[in-house]
Amino acid sequence: MQGGGEQREMWGSRIGFILAAAGSAIGLGNIWRFPYVLGESGGFAFLVVYIFFVLFIGIPIMAAELAIGRGSGRNPVGAFRLLKAGTPWWLVGAMGILTGVIILSYYSVVAGWTLNYVIKAVATFDTAFATSETAEGTFNHFLSSSGQQVLFHFLFMILCIVVVSQGIKGGIERWSKILMPTLLVLLVLLIVRAVTLPGAGAGLAFLLQPDFTKLNLNVILTALGQAFYSLSLGMGAIITYGSYLNKKENLFSSATTIAGLDMGIALMAGLAIFPAVFAMGFEASSGPGLTYIVLPRVFAELPAGQILAIIFFVLLSIAALTSAISLLEVMVTFVTDELKWPRSRATIIMAAVAFVLGVPSALGFGVWSEITIFGQSFFDASDFITANVMLPLGGLFIALFVGWGWDIEKVKKEISMGHTTLRFFTVWIWILRIAAPIALLAIFISNIAA
Ligand code: PHE
Image 1: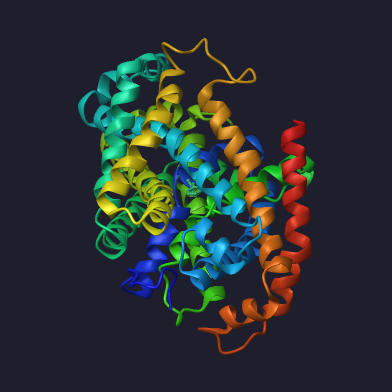
Image 2: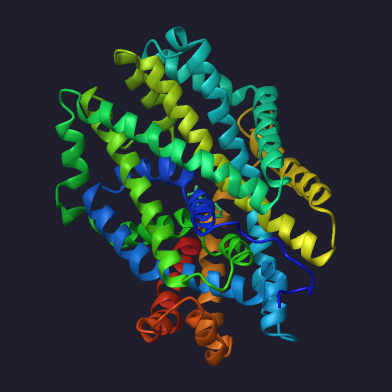
């Protein structure tokens, strides 16, 4: 029986669930963050470490989150309360929901930039990105236009409401089945263009040439943090999506498929971006501005560049939307489970909360630029505290819960549903018990010490 005792909606199909979860994982983290972090961390060496962490830490924790979600059939707070009643474990779920609200608040601001850039690519492409100065000016001007920042943050939140209010099967699943294949096609188009440019080889070499001299502790921890963020782990999004999953699915293979898709798209984003950046003579390590300043410039130098720019920003908007809806769904599932609110009311109110919380982030580039928290803007502080502190901490407790806190026989039973053998079970449980907690504690400590 599912949590709450009453009929709970379920994913309509395996592929629908996989695409929705991959949609959560594949986001700004893959297409906006991954390429520039990779660029700053020296390319290939970072890539190898990142892949290692996805395989050996990311996939096991994703399977752990799916097990918690499916085993309870509840939102993150309700899940821990059901599985370990009368203990403080539910606080892990509560922290997850809080993390989700904060991430959504600033994520929606960046997603709003992307929507705005779709319009810029369509309407003012020729003038806005004609030279490096105009491209930079366009971005800075947009950042400091507070009205626009709030407007596009708002518009993006409306899109999230439209999808999430339609429910799991009719909303998130249906939209993921349309949007994720579209994203893949658009990305392939960009890659074909990028790798066929004269001079693209330098970008490929940057990605694929073994050079381990750049490797240091910082790069290793950045790679782990990126793997974690990119897979949507540590805050209950995967617990929530797992709570709508039927007992016939194999959790290990689901986690592997989702992580594989996520990694594949991140690599493809690298393949679409670096060859073009190098071919046009730009720097790889340009930080967050890579997407909104360098890339539009790269496109402007190419024949039919306007079409490429439109494709790119539509793609980025899609990636952002399918991730943001998973963040919103965590909160919506929480209130529909716990307070029995109707979905439409839950969606609107929770989106409104995230919207309001995002306003200081949106204004921080303009009228509120004086206001700082610990010397950082509201936007940077929200990103820092969630990605570097709360997610690793959440992941740490999720690993410890499944490894030590939850009853091992029950864990085994949950995993064996949908599995023919328990071949990987022992390795998995020991990763959750020892290896993952050590790795996550390391990023947590190094991030707060930084
Ligand atoms: N995985 C998303 C990305 O890569 C971000 C995200 C984190 C979404 C946590 C949901 C939960 O952009």
